[in-house]
Image (cartoon, rainbow, N blue to C red):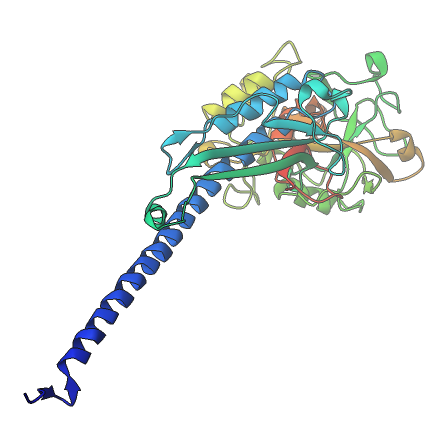
Length: 416
């Protein structure tokens, strides 16, 4: 019989080639499915890892907030970290994170030293770092399970773990007002009982000019190191956040600033040339004086409540003072953090021989009252809220982490 040809290829050869192509396609599909499955499963694990990292970060930042040196029981720090970490969810937000004590939150005094569970820490007050670890195991593969049907192949379920390490670092953007606070016992008149300020204590501005200051516990200081009254005015109406380091000098031109308008603008009381458009007020202008707050101490909690309702300045008659300017057009809801600020504490004996003094540390203070017309006869007052490095003071909640030279309040920061 005559062999049939088509396109020059025998029919038997075409059938042989077709079978080979089918085998190649089948093998290629298996490989393709495996590759697709691997990509999808790796993507899933990446998402789970990101979710676990969020939990670890939250845990570490919350736990380290209490490591100020004052915390004796690390259980407080551990509980804060676990609570924050457990608020997160994983596996496409379907499963709550489960952190346990000891195994997930550990402590160290140095990044170079081992991290230990709280029960193994000999000196809790020395702890400066917190490590939080989070994990999720037995994560079932999706498409990669297809490979399990191939002879000699077995794809196990996956596990993912993450960790975060945090410490507390000085803030860089907590802003200051241009005043100096005399260290208790350094030319302070009247003298401070116990030679130290107490939280909630009111302190008054000093009378007179250096070197012969009169009564009072704080005066005006240009934070840029000059003794220029214009610098003080600009630092009051603006935001002076580039804080000088401890040991740097601040300059004092005397007791009175250029005018009352710069100080009073923070209370939302404006006189020409000041205005809300250029000089932001606080969220409240409510003044604390001997008339409006007879106890003359511990006004901070009331200040917080007044800010929450944007309470306006109550007026000169109610405050018992006589200001220059008006608050009638002030929109306090458009205010900012303007009356709770940092101020340098200094050795005022250095001012007996000049207009410069060095910063010993930074204090958290509350501006209590506006200034009388032209500076007036009456002093203005600050309420002492504590050192900026004390995590319990209100100023410690402000600011973003800075570098090692920053001098603001201690705030949590991730380091790993």
